[in-house]
Length: 93
Figure 1 (cartoon, helix red, strand yellow):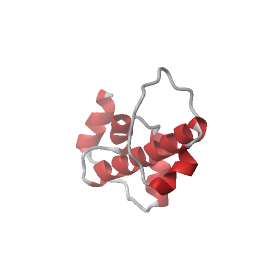
Figure 2 (cartoon, rainbow, N blue to C red):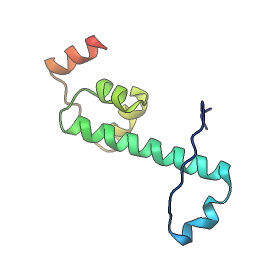
Figure 3 (spheres, rainbow, N blue to C red):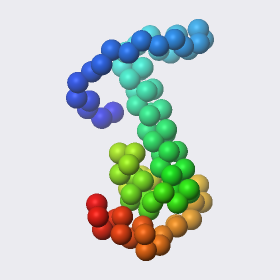
């Protein structure tokens, strides 16, 4: 698990059946971290599929390593969509 800088207290309501799994703070932080990374991956792939930018560009937008997003795109069969516009975005980064 990655080291985090600073902490913020968050209060939320969850289904009763989740309570047992969420009692331990370390477990809760790991669950949230895993879920956040999955959310970011899905967001990057959605943006990429919509033609918002190259894999490098969308990886940067969601704050994930390009390699991670690229591997997930390959695993899910998302084909590269690269054109001159994407090349310009990557050069500007």
